[in-house]
Image (tube, rainbow, N blue to C red):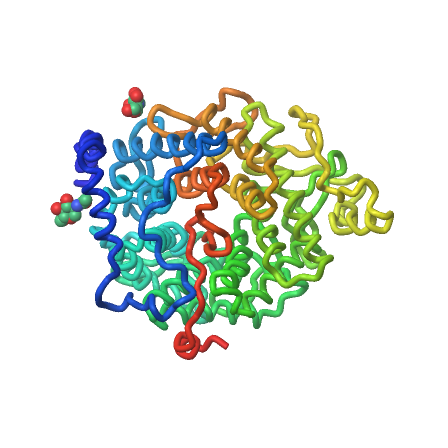
Length: 567
Ligand SMILES: *[C@@H]1O[C@H](CO)[C@@H](O)[C@H](O)[C@H]1NC(C)=O
Ligand SMILES: *[C@@H]1O[C@H](CO)[C@@H](O)[C@H](O)[C@H]1NC(C)=O
């Protein structure tokens, strides 16, 4: 592609604008920040409660504190990865950080760049951000007849990335492209009950299903934040209607005890299995229930009710303790008797952050608020221990946790019952089960075995550390995040970027030739925010989508409520 060649001279020219062009860059920024004059996107006056777009990038850190200097190290890591991407992957999807080549796994529209735009803004990398604008301006979202864009991934990464970069910078081009893409993906909802198809051709509107004819719960419920914000920015009913229709379907679904199954039937719109999980097939659905309520200024009670149900389903049925170190973990269950598999996925490490966010915002009884907060703390601690247990300092992707003796039904390990028993005894020691700090263990002595032993540069653990640090103010989460960052530097860095590793057991870890786009979009963003002393993305003003793209909290205006039928 032309893009690849265009990046090289730009890299060499980097020093010139730094020395000569500071004034010009500032001028360009102010020019970009000027409000658009005409067109469908000038509703800002009407939405008085929406925070105005940030007109300038975030300031660099003021004080030379220890933590701000650690944030600076993360920014350097980002620049290392991003310059490798620019140099060797041009505007392809992802850098392969060992061979210095690239791969197009996500439509070939320059995923890593789009996914990283808001991180650049937050890290005050103005020049990189502005250099990327011509690439954004050129996006056509073209696919050949035989290609399909996976709906879920395209929404959370590309659409979420464009919308977040727009919200932070106010650069109208980003919104124009988000609007184009949002429209091109709409054919996915043209199904009997409006559950989205797995993939769409953005040119012809043809759709196709994935490996399963059913719809994964996570895929049905991880488009509402992006499409509702897009509806708010554009005033277009066709963005709001289809995603709210899925919320109606969930509200009408006859599920027991807040247990929303992982798979739903495309043709009849009802559950197709009895598996419950917060891992791969379900994870971000939980997030989007709470976060929709937060994004729309706590006005949508449907989202609130569904989150409260799903969260109590998790607390009652999916949280378990190991018999040995009493590690709290979340697993999945199957069958009408909800038999636990004892699998624990790194992907599920987003849950402690989400529960903490809920504990600080939801209308809960004191007892429930405490349970949510304890579960958050205990789960995040287990995520941390799975890193600390390993010589590399990195955590494995999937574990099978130790079971209690003679316990086929799983009843003995259920966390809630241990908490209630501890409370009946008068809460001895003051620390509930699953929250006590423990010793790290060597291989063979741990209360779990690894099923997938690699670390794929995933964000979920540090995402939860960030949320817990901001919500509780407890510095231990920053210390743990710093240990994770040092391990990432030590074990995953390559000459042109950072690489997933195939085993976390011994150092040096064996590297894999891949650098997923969420590394720059999520992992480095959350680490940077964890270390920066200034609260750059306040949680009472922003909601992160499941790819760590912050969207601004807004209020529906009366005319929007009327138009979209919001009660
Ligand atoms: C990849 O790029 C880096 C940095 O430019 C370079 O040092 C390294 O030798 C390259 N590796 C290969 C396999 O070309
Ligand atoms: C954008 O597209 C135009 C026309 O095809 C091309 O000349 C230009 O190089 C492209 N710019 C970038 C940054 O890709």
